[in-house]
Image 1 (cartoon, rainbow, N blue to C red):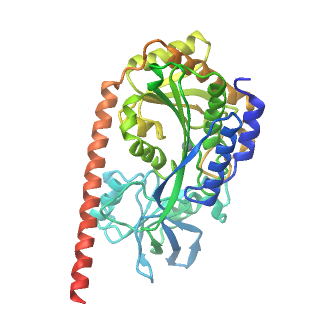
Image 2 (cartoon, helix red, strand yellow; image 1 turned 180 degrees about the vertical axis):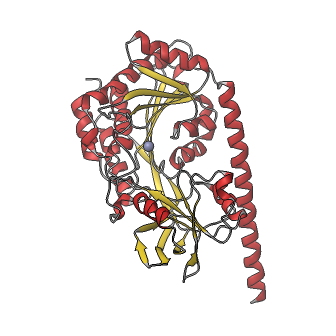
Image 3 (cartoon, rainbow, N blue to C red; image 1 turned 90 degrees about the vertical axis):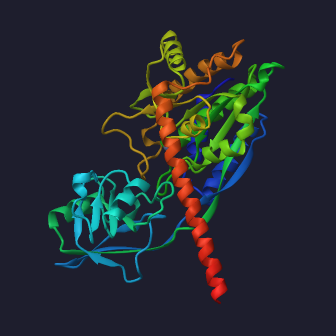
Length: 443
Ligand SMILES: [Zn+2]
């Protein structure tokens, strides 16, 4: 038995429960994955690391003028805090926050859609906005249900803070029509609080005395967001690499295969970043990273996001054609753990089975087993067994250690931005330490 549909489906069903980063449930899932590896006689282990785990103590949003009305809301972790009594100010809808939306935000609370991040926060702070409100969920849900709001934190580090919360998209629509004269926002949190998360790591050593030095690493994140069983995103990927482990345990390849189930992907690829940091000295022997993030959806199409050289992408497309595997491939960085490996210099790629418009969704309570299907699940898995066997048993390494020129440029720019952010963060820490010293002197 190489890979097994029934075994995979059972494991997928058993492990599809809420597994939020840093919680006992995430740890429980990690232990269950270790137990699954043991069934093939492979000893997996945990590798722990510290994570940001902001503790929200208060989130409040209401229209105060002309008529008082409270709304269900959640605070955005690490965004900042208001005074205890909150901030009361006019509300302005800034759409997707392009510059022309930001002309009139000084002294106001901004309602925004779309992605926010450190750059966005800085833009708002520079223009004098007091707080911002994002929207979650979809029009076909009940806005009174808090479970429709995906809790989250501001990604990355920022040198400025603007308190923020999320409301339901239906409420957002109501507010834009209402033009309230004043709204009130309260956000209280310990944004510095820490927690612990872990990766699960397993190895099947290569059989060739020389080639076994070279490593192919399979990854998939096993954490989920709150209120979501994360069946599609991403227990499907996690079980895909579990089946690959069963396969290679039974049929060892010439090269070594590593398996990393990453924690904390949903808070910014933290698990894979920590893995690359902890294993920095080994990475030069890693020839390729194959990541899976969301497979097995019933209605979907097979997608590959490649972060490697053009040769590699075309070769995979070619193997796909030879085997009648319907693949759509693109060269880019994927919003998943393959990006951490690419950033660390390891050519990587992510396989996904993506949904049609109006199909299955993720990061909410609707991401359950309902829209998944065992036969669809096997499509990606069967192809990658074929593909990785060829890479792992080839007499010479077929993955050049380089990236497509456009991709490399993009990565360089990102690296520069990250370095700047880290520098600012370090400066801020130093300043704080200085302040503390001064304070203790004064006492
Ligand atoms: Zn995911």
